[in-house]
Length: 257
Image 1 (cartoon, rainbow, N blue to C red):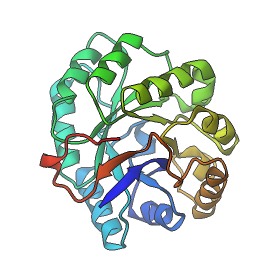
Image 2: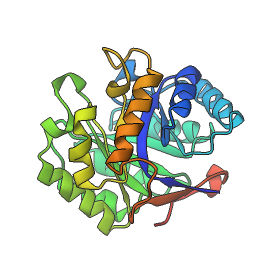
Image 3: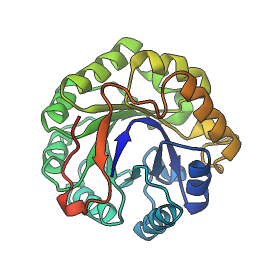
Protein backbone atom coordinates (compact mmCIF):
# COMPACT_ATOMS: atom_id res chain seq x y z
CA UNK A 1 0.00 0.00 0.00
CA UNK A 2 1.05 3.65 -0.36
CA UNK A 3 1.28 5.95 2.61
CA UNK A 4 1.77 9.71 2.14
CA UNK A 5 5.02 11.08 3.48
CA UNK A 6 3.23 14.08 4.88
CA UNK A 7 2.34 15.26 8.32
CA UNK A 8 3.78 15.38 11.80
CA UNK A 9 6.96 13.41 12.46
CA UNK A 10 7.77 12.52 16.06
CA UNK A 11 11.08 10.97 17.07
CA UNK A 12 11.05 8.03 19.49
CA UNK A 13 13.83 6.07 21.16
CA UNK A 14 12.27 2.66 21.90
CA UNK A 15 9.19 0.50 21.37
CA UNK A 16 7.35 1.95 24.37
CA UNK A 17 7.65 5.48 23.00
CA UNK A 18 6.79 4.26 19.51
CA UNK A 19 3.57 2.71 20.80
CA UNK A 20 2.73 5.96 22.58
CA UNK A 21 3.27 7.87 19.35
CA UNK A 22 1.10 5.37 17.49
CA UNK A 23 -1.65 5.73 20.10
CA UNK A 24 -1.49 9.51 19.71
CA UNK A 25 -2.04 9.22 15.96
CA UNK A 26 1.38 10.47 14.91
CA UNK A 27 1.71 10.48 11.12
CA UNK A 28 5.42 9.63 10.80
CA UNK A 29 7.35 7.76 13.49
CA UNK A 30 11.09 8.38 13.48
CA UNK A 31 13.63 6.31 15.40
CA UNK A 32 16.64 7.95 17.01
CA UNK A 33 18.46 8.45 20.32
CA UNK A 34 18.03 12.12 21.34
CA UNK A 35 20.61 11.80 24.11
CA UNK A 36 23.30 11.20 21.46
CA UNK A 37 22.80 14.38 19.45
CA UNK A 38 20.39 15.81 16.91
CA UNK A 39 20.50 12.62 14.84
CA UNK A 40 21.73 10.12 17.38
CA UNK A 41 21.39 6.59 16.07
CA UNK A 42 19.83 3.58 17.78
CA UNK A 43 21.34 0.09 17.62
CA UNK A 44 20.04 -1.75 14.58
CA UNK A 45 18.68 -4.55 16.75
CA UNK A 46 16.53 -2.01 18.62
CA UNK A 47 15.35 -0.40 15.38
CA UNK A 48 14.33 -3.82 14.09
CA UNK A 49 12.49 -4.55 17.36
CA UNK A 50 10.51 -1.31 17.06
CA UNK A 51 9.68 -1.91 13.39
CA UNK A 52 8.49 -5.46 14.11
CA UNK A 53 6.52 -4.33 17.15
CA UNK A 54 4.74 -1.50 15.37
CA UNK A 55 3.89 -3.57 12.31
CA UNK A 56 2.57 -6.26 14.63
CA UNK A 57 0.29 -3.65 16.19
CA UNK A 58 -1.13 -2.77 12.80
CA UNK A 59 0.88 0.38 12.16
CA UNK A 60 1.12 0.95 8.41
CA UNK A 61 2.53 4.48 8.35
CA UNK A 62 6.06 5.32 7.24
CA UNK A 63 8.89 4.58 9.66
CA UNK A 64 12.23 6.33 9.48
CA UNK A 65 15.50 6.01 11.37
CA UNK A 66 18.72 7.99 11.53
CA UNK A 67 22.19 6.55 11.06
CA UNK A 68 23.66 8.59 13.91
CA UNK A 69 25.86 11.68 14.00
CA UNK A 70 28.66 10.52 11.71
CA UNK A 71 31.26 13.07 10.52
CA UNK A 72 31.29 13.84 6.80
CA UNK A 73 34.92 12.70 6.71
CA UNK A 74 33.86 9.10 7.46
CA UNK A 75 32.19 8.24 4.17
CA UNK A 76 32.70 4.48 4.46
CA UNK A 77 31.10 4.50 7.91
CA UNK A 78 28.17 6.53 6.61
CA UNK A 79 27.53 4.12 3.74
CA UNK A 80 27.84 1.06 5.96
CA UNK A 81 25.47 2.54 8.50
CA UNK A 82 22.92 3.43 5.81
CA UNK A 83 22.96 -0.15 4.56
CA UNK A 84 22.59 -1.56 8.08
CA UNK A 85 19.71 0.74 9.03
CA UNK A 86 17.89 0.13 5.74
CA UNK A 87 18.08 -3.61 6.39
CA UNK A 88 16.09 -3.24 9.64
CA UNK A 89 12.87 -2.73 7.70
CA UNK A 90 12.40 1.02 8.03
CA UNK A 91 11.01 2.81 5.00
CA UNK A 92 13.29 5.83 5.14
CA UNK A 93 16.90 6.35 6.24
CA UNK A 94 17.85 9.83 7.46
CA UNK A 95 21.44 11.03 7.08
CA UNK A 96 22.71 14.20 8.72
CA UNK A 97 24.63 16.57 6.44
CA UNK A 98 26.91 19.31 7.71
CA UNK A 99 28.56 21.92 5.52
CA UNK A 100 32.18 21.35 4.60
CA UNK A 101 34.44 20.16 1.80
CA UNK A 102 33.51 16.49 2.26
CA UNK A 103 29.73 16.97 2.19
CA UNK A 104 29.44 17.01 -1.61
CA UNK A 105 31.09 13.59 -1.85
CA UNK A 106 28.64 12.25 0.74
CA UNK A 107 25.66 13.53 -1.25
CA UNK A 108 27.04 11.99 -4.44
CA UNK A 109 27.65 8.63 -2.73
CA UNK A 110 24.18 8.50 -1.17
CA UNK A 111 22.27 9.37 -4.34
CA UNK A 112 22.52 6.00 -6.17
CA UNK A 113 21.88 3.78 -3.14
CA UNK A 114 18.88 1.43 -3.48
CA UNK A 115 16.90 2.77 -0.53
CA UNK A 116 14.87 5.86 0.28
CA UNK A 117 17.29 8.35 1.85
CA UNK A 118 16.46 11.77 3.23
CA UNK A 119 19.47 14.04 3.74
CA UNK A 120 18.99 16.19 6.84
CA UNK A 121 20.85 19.49 6.59
CA UNK A 122 21.92 20.84 9.96
CA UNK A 123 21.32 24.57 9.68
CA UNK A 124 22.98 25.96 12.81
CA UNK A 125 25.71 27.69 10.81
CA UNK A 126 23.54 28.55 7.83
CA UNK A 127 22.81 26.75 4.58
CA UNK A 128 25.18 26.06 1.71
CA UNK A 129 23.20 26.84 -1.48
CA UNK A 130 25.56 24.84 -3.69
CA UNK A 131 25.21 21.78 -1.46
CA UNK A 132 21.43 22.10 -1.43
CA UNK A 133 21.39 22.42 -5.21
CA UNK A 134 23.48 19.26 -5.44
CA UNK A 135 20.94 17.41 -3.29
CA UNK A 136 18.06 18.73 -5.40
CA UNK A 137 19.71 17.47 -8.57
CA UNK A 138 20.41 14.09 -6.95
CA UNK A 139 16.65 13.50 -6.81
CA UNK A 140 16.32 12.33 -3.23
CA UNK A 141 12.64 11.82 -2.37
CA UNK A 142 12.80 14.61 0.21
CA UNK A 143 15.19 16.93 2.01
CA UNK A 144 14.99 18.13 5.58
CA UNK A 145 16.34 20.94 7.75
CA UNK A 146 17.16 20.48 11.44
CA UNK A 147 19.38 21.99 14.12
CA UNK A 148 22.15 20.33 16.10
CA UNK A 149 22.33 22.67 19.08
CA UNK A 150 18.86 22.44 20.57
CA UNK A 151 19.75 24.70 23.51
CA UNK A 152 20.28 27.68 21.19
CA UNK A 153 16.72 28.06 20.03
CA UNK A 154 14.55 26.68 17.29
CA UNK A 155 14.98 26.45 13.54
CA UNK A 156 13.21 29.82 13.36
CA UNK A 157 15.98 31.34 15.50
CA UNK A 158 18.64 29.97 13.16
CA UNK A 159 17.14 30.79 9.75
CA UNK A 160 14.91 33.61 8.56
CA UNK A 161 11.43 32.73 7.37
CA UNK A 162 12.43 33.83 3.87
CA UNK A 163 15.24 31.24 3.86
CA UNK A 164 12.86 28.54 5.04
CA UNK A 165 10.32 29.51 2.41
CA UNK A 166 12.97 29.37 -0.30
CA UNK A 167 14.04 25.91 0.87
CA UNK A 168 10.50 24.54 0.77
CA UNK A 169 9.83 26.11 -2.62
CA UNK A 170 13.05 24.72 -4.09
CA UNK A 171 12.20 21.22 -2.87
CA UNK A 172 8.78 21.42 -4.47
CA UNK A 173 10.17 22.73 -7.76
CA UNK A 174 12.40 19.67 -7.91
CA UNK A 175 9.59 17.26 -7.07
CA UNK A 176 10.94 16.64 -3.57
CA UNK A 177 9.26 16.71 -0.21
CA UNK A 178 10.40 19.35 2.28
CA UNK A 179 10.77 18.65 6.00
CA UNK A 180 11.40 21.12 8.82
CA UNK A 181 12.57 20.33 12.35
CA UNK A 182 14.74 21.81 15.05
CA UNK A 183 13.55 22.39 18.64
CA UNK A 184 10.06 23.13 17.35
CA UNK A 185 7.24 23.81 19.82
CA UNK A 186 3.48 24.21 19.74
CA UNK A 187 3.90 27.97 19.28
CA UNK A 188 5.61 27.40 15.93
CA UNK A 189 2.67 25.63 14.29
CA UNK A 190 1.20 28.75 12.67
CA UNK A 191 4.54 29.79 11.19
CA UNK A 192 5.14 26.25 9.97
CA UNK A 193 1.75 26.11 8.29
CA UNK A 194 2.52 29.35 6.45
CA UNK A 195 5.57 27.68 4.88
CA UNK A 196 3.63 24.65 3.54
CA UNK A 197 6.26 21.96 4.21
CA UNK A 198 5.42 18.31 3.61
CA UNK A 199 6.26 17.28 7.13
CA UNK A 200 7.40 18.82 10.39
CA UNK A 201 9.48 17.08 13.05
CA UNK A 202 9.09 17.25 16.81
CA UNK A 203 10.70 15.79 19.91
CA UNK A 204 11.08 18.51 22.55
CA UNK A 205 7.41 19.51 22.27
CA UNK A 206 6.18 16.07 23.32
CA UNK A 207 8.53 15.64 26.29
CA UNK A 208 8.34 17.21 29.74
CA UNK A 209 11.56 19.08 30.39
CA UNK A 210 14.60 17.89 28.49
CA UNK A 211 14.04 16.26 25.09
CA UNK A 212 16.01 13.26 26.34
CA UNK A 213 13.18 12.55 28.79
CA UNK A 214 10.35 10.22 27.87
CA UNK A 215 7.70 11.00 25.28
CA UNK A 216 4.34 11.90 26.81
CA UNK A 217 1.25 10.50 25.11
CA UNK A 218 -0.97 13.40 26.17
CA UNK A 219 1.44 15.94 24.72
CA UNK A 220 1.70 13.97 21.49
CA UNK A 221 -2.10 13.84 21.23
CA UNK A 222 -2.34 17.58 21.88
CA UNK A 223 0.30 18.24 19.24
CA UNK A 224 -1.57 16.18 16.66
CA UNK A 225 -4.84 17.94 17.46
CA UNK A 226 -3.32 21.40 17.11
CA UNK A 227 -1.35 20.43 14.01
CA UNK A 228 -4.58 19.25 12.41
CA UNK A 229 -6.16 22.67 12.92
CA UNK A 230 -3.31 24.15 10.88
CA UNK A 231 -3.49 21.51 8.14
CA UNK A 232 -0.12 20.07 9.10
CA UNK A 233 -1.14 16.49 9.84
CA UNK A 234 -2.97 13.82 7.85
CA UNK A 235 -4.79 16.08 5.40
CA UNK A 236 -3.08 15.63 2.07
CA UNK A 237 -1.54 18.59 0.25
CA UNK A 238 -0.52 19.07 -3.40
CA UNK A 239 3.13 18.32 -2.73
CA UNK A 240 2.68 15.20 -0.61
CA UNK A 241 4.84 12.31 -1.79
CA UNK A 242 4.26 8.59 -1.54
CA UNK A 243 6.60 6.05 -0.01
CA UNK A 244 5.79 2.53 -1.27
CA UNK A 245 5.20 0.39 1.79
CA UNK A 246 6.15 -3.26 2.02
CA UNK A 247 8.62 -3.05 -0.87
CA UNK A 248 11.99 -4.76 -0.26
CA UNK A 249 14.64 -2.14 0.42
CA UNK A 250 16.70 -3.46 -2.49
CA UNK A 251 13.89 -2.36 -4.82
CA UNK A 252 13.19 0.98 -3.16
CA UNK A 253 15.05 3.86 -4.78
CA UNK A 254 12.81 6.89 -4.51
CA UNK A 255 9.23 8.02 -4.28
CA UNK A 256 7.14 9.92 -6.75
CA UNK A 257 4.86 12.90 -6.47
